[in-house]
Image (cartoon, rainbow, N blue to C red; front, side):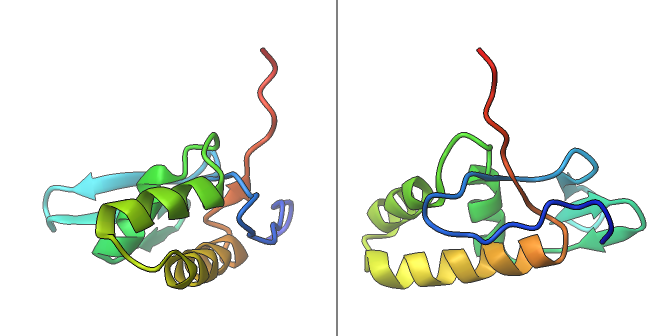
Length: 103
């Protein structure tokens, strides 16, 4: 995708949906979707939970900590899955690295 900022997702990344993409609940189909120009992606329930944490403020590591605590699950396994999922979405142009906010 021309002009996109490719990211290598790590626990230090602060991913966010790009301005042109929106995570919305489709009332008609009763599913969450990511809407982007000429593209629609219907992520599964777990992906939606992770995407809702992608606010550009939380790091991936913070998201992993939160999910590990919520599900009382192995942090390493969650980190591996979350980083892989976010990298896949980033490679498809659905995530970018958040810019530092000027205060």
